[in-house]
Length: 151
Image (cartoon, rainbow, N blue to C red):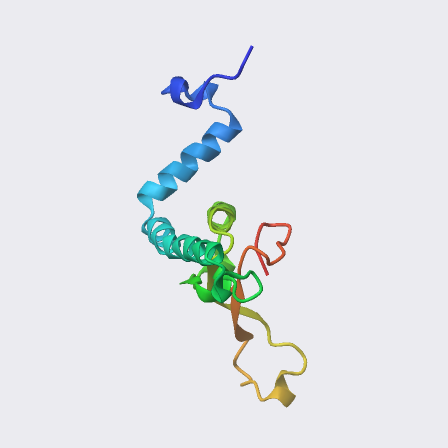
């Protein structure tokens, strides 16, 4: 017997497969989250640039050659997520879903931290400062830790 269709299951929540729940969550994210809608709208520029690049190639123009420029180098949608180091599993899953949906054009910037370590005195770190802070920029190509956090 085949699996019930996502659209036919309606309010029979028990009939939804894991894949159906993922689709439903993505749909809800696109409609309920301002960030998702903003990123989706901004990344349309990336798609438009790709189309422009392809059309240039059809005219044998120098700009249309693949070795001249890459669309990902021309357009990037960078989002600041200051709380990324503190995200729970669900928030990380939603962020990773955005990386999957917009792999070439989405980058996330945040402030990360680590313990100040033994060389803090010689580096001039204030004695009352418990952590070292540094800026981070991640994208889909960054490897993931076991908890789903990219680094």
